[in-house]
Amino acid sequence: MTAYAYYPGCSLSGLGKPYDESLRAVFGHLGLGLEEIPDWNCCGATSYMSVSEDKAVALAARNLAIAEKRGAEVVAPCAACFLVLTKAQHMMAEYPALAAKVHTGLRAAGLTYEGRAVVRHPLDILVNDVGLDAIRAKVTRPLAGYRVAPYYGCQVVRPYGTFDDPLRPQTLDRLMAAVGAHVVDYPLKAHCCGGSLTGTMEEIGVRLNFLLLKEAKARTANVLATVCPLCQYNLEAYQGKMRHTFNEDVSLPIVYFTQLLGLAFGLSPASVGLQRNFVTAEPLPAMA
Amino acid sequence: MRNGTTHCRYAEDVNPAFPAEIMAKPGGEALRDCIQCGTCSGACPMSVHMDLTPRRVIALTRAGLERDVLESATPWLCASCYECQVRCPRDIKVTEVMYALKRRAIEKGMYPKRFPIPVLAKAFYNMVATHGRNSESRLLIELAFRTNPFSLLKMAPIGIKLLRTGRMALGQDHTKNPKEIKAILDAMEES
Ligand code: SF4
Ligand code: SF4
Image 1: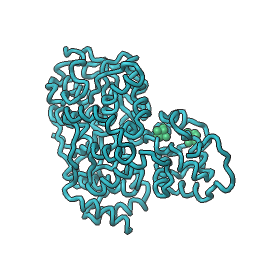
Image 2: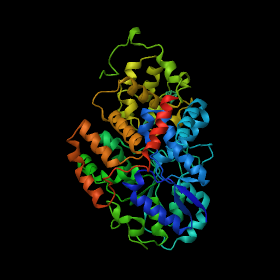
Image 3: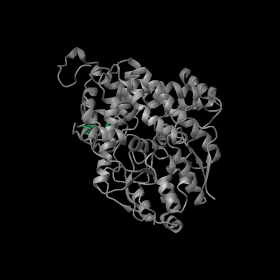
Image 4: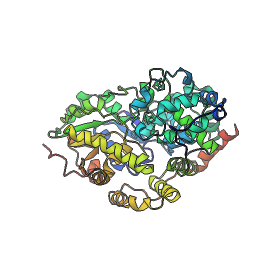
């Protein structure tokens, strides 16, 4: 059994709990091990980078150092965590002075990091390690009737994602098609949801997310699949506000791609955390 | 805040050392190669909300007009989506320049006043430095108290739904030994 070092990050224990639950369920079903990195710390997200770059890299590097010791590839499902961890690796490789400072910090905590950790997004693992044929073979309830808008957001594919095109990614499209969904053409698939802007500059954040949903609807999607907890939250939690502000109903179930995979594998809605979504299973098209 | 589009700029507004300082930061190196094509501004999902478009931020930065860019909302509206950066025909790391400007603005205390984003960044920084992990709900509450307490009321309906679906952690999560994080950060401070 392949085992991965799991970096859930702060989001997957709170807002993104259904992502955590469905990821574990799907990996378990496929015989992939997920071992949580012991005592991981917050990756620092974009906020830490805005205050101190070298310390942000050091925070990320602590997790990489712990994972490296265990020798397994790191799975980072949250887009911001994925970005920050991979960015820390790039920065340390490209800027020796910064790396030296980070090493000094790590040493103070009795840690070393040699730069060997490999950080992966679960979408990459499922499509490129497991493979679409193996996934197809596990499908017991094809997602017939699901018209999925595949939404990647930004940081999984840009700028350090290596497994797909940074502007016109296809991986999620292929994965969703493999489990029987109809994938709609969604030109905004790699556009930004604004990240934490909904919390800080609400009008701006809500407008961005409204546009994303409006387009998904115009493309006849009846469900939107995400790969990031912040995108999921932004697109889902502000639907009421969108209706109010723009006088237009763009409500749509916003689910994690791992939730859809789990359903296609025949797992129960509860085991993929579907009851935790605001727009729950009912508006999802009836299962075949 | 001065409106970036309407005021004149004079020689004394220029900080001649500023461009070199930003270019010395990781990602700032290629600043001089910008051809002002505007691809970044066209690609940026936030540019319609910005007082200065990303292209103008690059132009003003390399012209040394430090106050214009640091007091602008633009670096803080940048959502770090890297759309500009991957599209730039001159390989300018526009997103990284935005980060360098944010850090510089915080260092100098020159960010736009009563603007919630630098406040959030600093609150987040402190939370992680102390606890090793962040608790989103606490952060949002702290942010609201510091900027606009009434916004908490507006947030309530979403908060209630998050609680009901078990997606809001109210306690402060932390690593087993938060002192370890502090040791790392302190050692870097001294180095
Ligand atoms: S896309 Fe690049 S070259 Fe064009 S204006 Fe922006 S930074 Fe300059
Ligand atoms: S990274 Fe920032 S400046 Fe660049 S396109 Fe995205 S929001 Fe705009």
